[in-house]
Image (tube, rainbow, N blue to C red; front, side, top):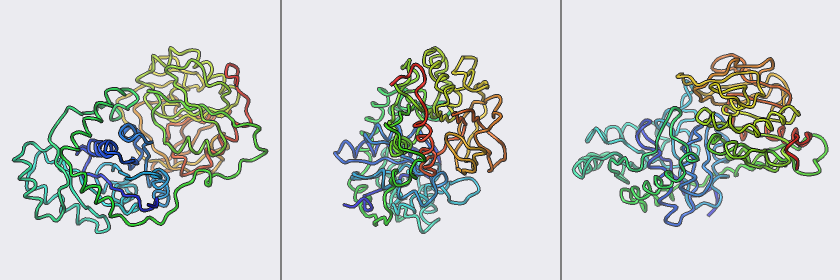
Length: 465
């Protein structure tokens, strides 16, 4: 089987809250437990759901975002992530046809399904309806003839009688029912201010939840029919995305050895796209993960640092208590080594977060608020820095309930151009820190530039190789 013909399904819903994550994660786990190699994917910029997908399948959860990466990259990124798999399952975002605000279908689940030529299975919350479910499904099936809505999974079904009424109604819709799941809170995943609690924070409980989801799906869904549907897909003509092919040769002579770039992880820093580490490695770096909650030192020989997003506000006391690591991060930044920080990383580099001392690299204070800042952004690099050349244009995503005062330094990281115009973030020495989450697969030069800068730096004191 060629990569382009890999069996695939998109799991969608009429709206948020219908149970997409429950069903998609359960299906991934059930098929994986049946012996299939399952490739997990998520539409949109979500970092948390892919963690559950990875737990269910044993493979990296990967995002497919047509706004951040462009429509032309969706199929190649999918094929890259799905290489070697027997089945690929793609969890949608929001409602099936909901995309980037004001941009039509762009980045919607329907858009990605069309780009992947994949059939859609609609998860419907049936808890407060019976015959009306057929009208709802008919509307979604007929809205866009290019979207192949090929099956329905009824979720939150109340009883055998309720299921019987729903199936009778669906008989006339022309869309087959491929599963019916009862209301059940046993496999719930806890939420807080930015969505589900990440797997890294509740791993043992998450393992139990995923196993329970798999059991529910096996009991309530027709796995054979779903797999047969997944195998009806046409060949994708695209070539898989190749991180090495995306990178231009680094400027200057080759480094005598690979520069070591430390990448923050652990429970406080769970937001990262799988392709970032792959691009860093393809650009010639040795990638070394570390956990700022547990490790008192940077990996030996660190010449560059990447700190992605996550929940530092939840762990501010513990991050603050790790004074030896905070000092090493500050020393590395002071040495001029490249430091790329997004959102949570930005907060970690600040003077303080909710009154708790942080690394003190940036002249700013951070605090939690009740206000959610959320949305896609377009931005441009205003000056040359360790991450981006002046004039580099990117699309990114903001998602946080914190504020930083001031919100930008004397040299801002980005000038935002859409949907609002303002400057944001900090550039100082080798530091590039911003609230903006950027998918490097859309602009691989960011990884290449960071690695080239790291190759020219020397390890900070305390991080000898």
